Every structure is written in structure tokens, then in C-alpha cells.
Length: 146
Image (tube, rainbow, N blue to C red; front, side):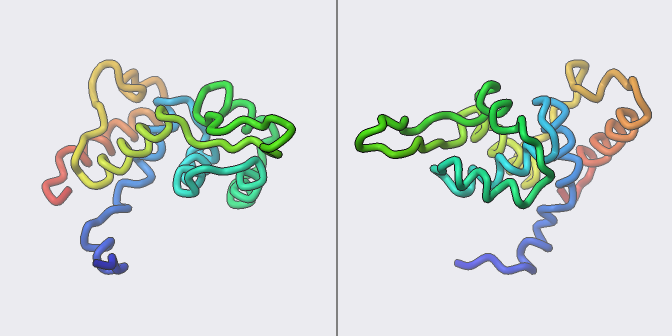
């Protein structure tokens, strides 16, 4: 079965995409570009540093992104270079990354809710933006069509 554009529209898959993306970025201390790149790389599967560079053409440039994502364990080594038979290292998104992306998909599909409790990153209402996101999350959770 092939999914058509009308199927996605009827599912309203992207209705709360921005809210879910902002929640994920703030919760996991990622930038929008980091998250978009991780989703791209997760779709690629196993990738080389060259594939990573090709993915960065889609988003804003950040020369520290590669090391930051590796240090925070969003990207892991699948096969290391050994200078004889393996000419380059092959990477993959980590289990941590795969779980985050799966969770985002589940929230977008309505199978799971964004955590909305005292430990939520938006709960503290420090800024106007936090208050707006709290209201948006509340509206999303109450949406009967979701």
C-alpha cells in the first residue's frame, strides 16, 4: 500500500509538528538544525562523514555540530576505520536518537502525549514563549481529532 498526500492530510500528521519539534529541542537541548539533521541521518541509516556533510546542506551551518552530536552520544560509530581494509569510519544514529525520533512520530500520530507535568521543560512559565507553548500543548492534548 502506498501512502498518498491526501492520506497524510487526513491523518493531520504535521498539524502539531512545530510544537513537537520545539518540545524535543528544548527537552533534549538540541537546536532545530541538530534535530532536523538527526532525522535526516536516521532516514539514511548508516552513513559516512561525507553523508553527514551532504545532510548539512539542508540546514544552517554550525562547524561544531558534528563533535557536539558525537560527544552527547546522538551519533555513534558503527564500524571504525582501521587504516588497512576499512578506509573510513561508518556511523549511525544512536539508540538514544532512534528512541527520540520514534517518540516524536508516536506523538505526531497521537499514540503518545507530550509529557505535561511539573517536570516538563515548559512548565516553569519563565518566559512568554513558555506560556504560549504550555497553552499549545494543553490545546493539543485536549484536541478530540488527534
